[in-house]
Length: 419
Image (cartoon, rainbow, N blue to C red; front, side):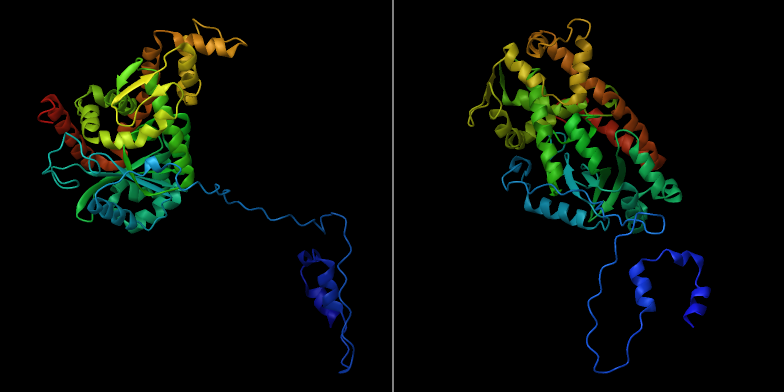
């Protein structure tokens, strides 16, 4: 009987571990008072052959979790908002079934700006849209779930081509997909989707400054992530260093905030077209100076050579070449490489790095080089994202969005009093 079964077994069954073969041919005594069988000896170690491949250890493909951050780390990032605003923002994010690792709300729909009167309710007609940014792990998977839950958030062509098309368009620099003019919870919202990897890369290296620049300004974190909080703290310090290198020995806190807020608009083509309020930076800083101070004061006073008393609006910094070189060397890699290229024809990098960086930091033209470097980083991604808006929003919403931008630009031309 056993031999018949063996003949019927497929040839692929030859690859069997010896211990299972021994179990299949073992005879068992029917005597009721027989002693317990001796323990089975482990099979002898077989040479590694095609018939007896060595077992491979299991490997975990999960990302290693970051160690727990101290409770007070990055507390400057946790900016308060009104309870009603907080409840609204959290309820909107809770509506999404697709997994979001990190989410924040930003812009005039969250923090007040001069460009909108007190009667303009955020999210209402005539008021600012509420802007969100979602960082996810896998964009294709996220859009697949979200497109099934909220198909109306996407234009018709995106629904026809599916989530793989959306994720491919999202990957195009600067790595964001936007859904705009979305009605939720009785308000209008705009939300961008990116990956955590893309977000953290921009925060650390200023790859495009598209995301990092938005996070230089006050944001309201709705879903937190330790990796993003860590890299965001680096991003904020980088913004301070870049601003200090363009400021004199003594300046006001409003000058510092304006310099930081303007980084993401350096080179943005919309600032030179009737597509953006030209007073945007001033409008942001005038109304949000308390949030800027909460965000940056602890970071500024932690840098060597900078003096900023907590109850003072005046800041002093050491502008000697050695002090400025300490800031210059620690700029994000993309900006730093641009600065080095600008000076390549005038200064040769030698083995004495301290002298080299001190020469660059002591040059009177460094602030101009910094401005040009940041403009070069921002210009191309901002232009591409503006063109991507036609694809991500569709023609109807694109025209509607452009009309609102032109309206803001016109308000900016009327001066601060009417904008």
